[in-house]
Image (cartoon, rainbow, N blue to C red):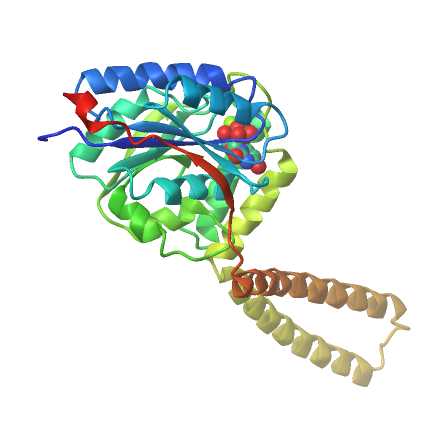
Length: 326
Ligand code: UDP
Ligand code: MG
């Protein structure tokens, strides 16, 4: 490489006051090292995206920015838009400013030391570098098994996601530009990025425990995220309904024949329980199928509205004085 390129980090933060200073400190050290090794340009920035926090997250970001405007930047979203939207807000804001961009959670669960390897892979020509967890020792058994079941289920349902990869990844400027062409409202970035393509690779890291504060992803949100991932990326559930309908039809014809033979043979019963059972069964199945169709209709509704996915209230960023570098 001739000249080190510009790296922007995008870090979504929702009520992260306990951990934010520590994260900033660690990223700052990492940046100093990378800049002195001439792996990244001194114009590189760390962008914290405040996702409508109700604690002092934004004032900490402001403080960091005013102390070191040539290192820390901040984006303040007007309201809580959710992790995926906050990440996208950051990516779309920096896409013209950087050569490469890494997204990382604010809680230091992703290993900061993986950044070196990601940047090196970028210089080797990769447009996307996926951070993949090699160990899940620090997650609870419940989180670990539900997360692994999630990836397997996604695959069965026809959505192409990188196994054990969350949203810790490097993307080139080119990929960010292509990503801006995805206009969907129901965001599932880890499904969208593989769709973009280009040369890519994986780097492995050990996922740590949250450095401070608590998870903003309770089971309820995780389940909603999984359902969103499947229904945003696959029409397999719809195909399953068709298959189920077909099987039910064949079964009901057989049942009809059986009932007819039974009637002719004269060994019919009063049949109350079987009637009630089938009413419940059919009713349940119909409701279930309608529910799945409703998922899709809900999505069509959201897409048709084309609402902005986030609104940026403020963007703090100093591009730096190029003369300073010399
Ligand atoms: N986050 C966000 N908006 C939200 C929820 C979470 O920006 O509505 C951020 C959060 O600050 C963190 C990242 O998304 O940086 C991942 O959240 P968390 O660590 O709580 O999820 P977990 O790792 O427990 O799945
Ligand atoms: Mg976390």
